[in-house]
Image (cartoon, rainbow, N blue to C red; front, side, top):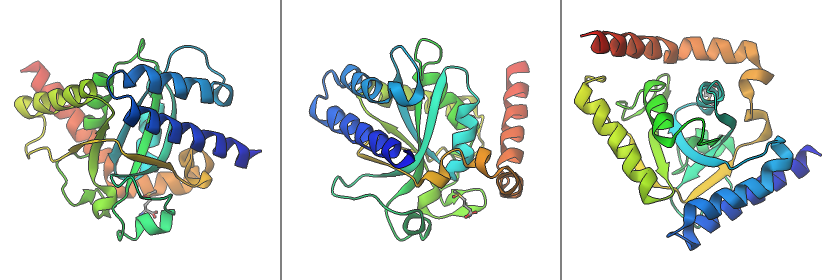
Length: 229
Ligand code: MHO
C-alpha cells in the first residue's frame, strides 16, 4: 500500500513539473490543479493548494520546521537538481556530495492562509542563507541554500524577501541563497519522510548537535532587537 502511495505521489510530482514547463504562462493554476487532483485522496484535504520548493540543508529539519506552520498541509523531503535528464538519485548518492542534487523539501500549502512571501521569509529565518559551503554541521553542495521558483511571480517574491533581509541587515554576511527555476524534484526514500516523527531520539540528538537551533534563536533575537530599535 505504501509503495502505491509513493508511486501516486511520484507521478503527481512528475506531472506537476511537466505541467509547469509546458504551460509557463498560466503555469500556477495548472500545476496546482494537477497537484490537487492527484493528492487530495492521499492527504484527505479539500480546496486549492499551492507548492513551494526550498533547500536549507538536512531535509529532516527543514521538513519539521515547515510542518509547524499554519496553512502548510504537507511537506515532502526530496532531492532537486537542474538537469532535466537526471533520474531519481538515492540518499547515499546525494549525501556523497558527488552529484549535483540538493536535499530539498516540497511544501504544500493553502495560499489563503499563508503566502509564498511569508514562506520565503520563514525559510530565511530557519536556516543560514549566508553559508556558502553547506548548512551547519553538514558540508557540501548537497546541503546548500536554494529557493526554486516555478514562475516569475515566485522568482520576484523570493528576490524581494532576500533584498528586504539584506537591507534590514538581519544577517551580517551577504545572503548567498541560490534562486533558481525548479527543474526536478525527486521524492526521497520513505524512511526520510517525517523522519522527526519516526526517529525522534536520533533526530533530536542530530538536530541539537547540528547548531541549527542556536542559529534560529540568534536570528530571532536579532530580528526582535532590530524591530524594537
Ligand atoms: N549528517 C547527517 C545528515 C542528515 S540529513 C538527512 C546524518 O547522516 O545523520 O542530511
